[in-house]
Structures are given as structure tokens and as C-alpha cells.
Image 1 (tube, rainbow, N blue to C red):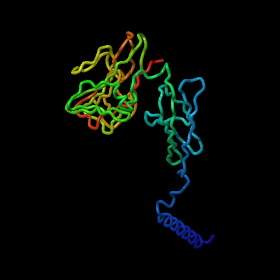
Image 2: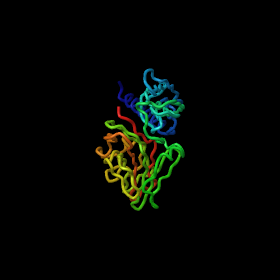
Image 3: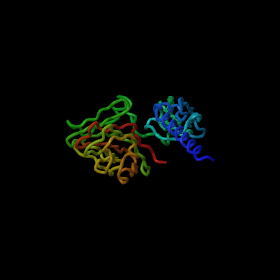
Image 4: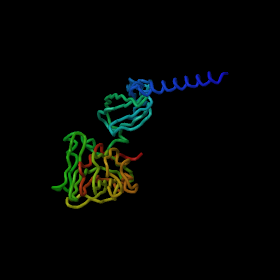
Length: 288
């Protein structure tokens, strides 16, 4: 082939390549936004079905079309789950079940349903009264211990918030009936929007009656948040069994050595609890 023709073809190819580069570089960034990778509509609908042969156990089933991942909230905060998911609700009450569906490109949608549980499970039910902290009737089941001018417990709809400054502290407790030889699992949802400074939150259970002016330590720590151990220094939310630290102080199991009345005590305080630590859904259940 003539060398002159080859040179002309090479020059033409260079011009075409430059034109393509120039054209694409001049397009606005969002011209390729609608590329089909992000779902424009995600269906978060789901069904709730009682599981046959199981007490207060329900099957949650999300419709699967276009859903890549499911997040469920049954009252303890958002948690990853499968599209078909079994939950146990041993306590009577009305529950709001929330499902967040995640589709292509991270698109999300949410659906909610209310589920009424008529009766508590006699085996797995919460032995505490007013553990939901839902209203004044629930709040009245708890006694405030060690009230201080620079510490407070603020009851709200579904929660109690502990705040303190200047190394003050306080807490709440409740008498419960326990059976010798049985183990009881204690848990609750805890959260803070700010984190805390030089702060503790501790859970105890023992047979001694709490005395105002004395820090309760009967039976040793069963659950704990402590900024010295690396917990609660920044914002957090979740069951204390998950967000608590130092495993030996976070086992959450009370073993009854005698039948009768024991006292569940939740107390906290510190130098600066900032926005405070919110407590919700307090549970004390027989271990199966």
C-alpha cells in the first residue's frame, strides 16, 4: 500500500478518536445517571404468619422481586435479616413490624404492619413488670434509687433516660420473684445520641434490698457499659448484650440460689453523661 495513503488513514483515525473523547468529555455528569443500575421502585411489602406448633413465633416473608437485602425492626432497632425470617415475641402486646427492602443501586423502601400478640408465653415470658416503659403505669413498677440533684431519670413514652454530671449517679430497681436453681437472662436496649465521658451503666441482681445512699453491687455486674472499657464513648444504639463491653461484665445471667424476691437494679452515672443513656425494652427471662 502507498505510504502516503497509510499516513492519511492514520491521521483520520486520530481525528475520529479525538472527536469521540471531546464529545464524551463534554457530556454532563448526570447524562448517564439513568443507566438501569438503580431501581426506581422497590416493593417492601411482606406477610406475617403464625408458625404452627410454636408459641408466639411468627414467620415474616418479604416479597422477593427486586429485593437484594432485607432489614427488619421488631422493636429493638434495625437489624439485617433474611427475606424469610422467624421472630419470637413471648410477651403479650401490640408490635410494629418494620421491613426495609434494599434494591439495586441501594434504593430503599419501607413497609410496616402491626401485630397483636394476645397472651404471653408462660415459659419464655418477661418476669419484669413494666419492662416496655410505655406509660405511667409501667413507670410506676420501678423505684428510683439514689436520686441526686445533678443526676436524673426521665421517663418518656417507651423509655427511661439516665443523665448525670459531676460524678453523680442514680438508678431504678424492681422486685421480682425467682425460683431457686433457675437461670434468668437479662437484657435491654440502650442508646445515646452523643456518647458519654467518664460514664458507667451497670446491671445487678441480688437478694439484698437496695438502700438509698449506697451503690448496689449485690451479685456482681451482669451487664455493663463503661467508657473506661471502651463502650459508650461515641453515639451507639442496640441491646446491651451487643453494645456492652468487657465480656466478663456482660454475661447477663442471674442464677437464683433461693426461691423468693430478688431485686433487679440498673444504675449509672459519671462525670458527664451528656445527652444521657436511654433504656428501652428491659427483659428478664427464664433461660431455656
